[in-house]
Image (tube, rainbow, N blue to C red; front, top):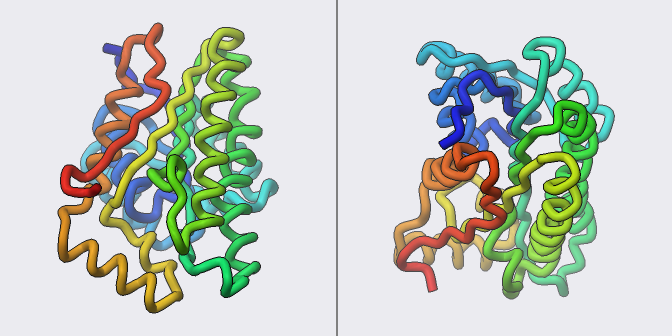
Length: 248
C-alpha cells in the first residue's frame, strides 16, 4: 500500500457531494487538499471542518470551464503547498432534458464543464507531474459514460468523452512519465447533481428512483478514490465501475 500522507491534491467540484467527501477522506489520510469550486462559502465551511479535524486545506475559487481560472487556482496551490501529486477531476453539471427541447445553452454548459473542464485542469497540472515523474489523475465519469439513456444524450456524451480520454491518457502518460490515471464511473449517487434538472418529468423520474433503491453515498466514491490512490505504485487501477446493489 502506498502512503499518501504529505501528498498534495487538487479536487474540483469540492463544494459538495463527491468532491467534498473526497477532500475529507484524503485530508484524513494526511493529504494537503486544494478544494476548488465556484461556491466559496461552501469551500470555507469545508476548510474549517478539515482543519478542525487536523487536516490541511486551501480554498480555491475556480470555474473549471475557464482556463484562466484553472491556471490561477493551480498557481495558488503550488505557491502554498509546493506541488500537485493528485488531481481529482470531479466538477460536473447535469441539466437533464430530452434532446427535442433543444436546450443548447445547457448542452454547451455540460460540454464546457464536464469535459473541457477535465481537459483544462489536466493541461495545467500535467507539466508538474511530468517534471516530478509521478502523479495520479482521477476522472469522475458516470454509468452514463457507458450507456446512454433518454434525457441524458449530451450528458452521456460528455461522460463517454471523459472515459475515453482517461483510457487514452493512461496509455500515453503511464509508461512515459509514471503518471497513473483512474476513471471512476458511478451509478446513482445521493448528491446535488439532480438539483440541476429543470425538466419536471426528469426530476420526478429521479425522485421515483430514490423511493425504490438505496443510492450510493458520496463517501462510497471517496473510498474508491482512496483505494486506487493507496494502491502500490506499480499498480494503476484504471477503471472502477461502482453501482448501487439495487440499481439495474
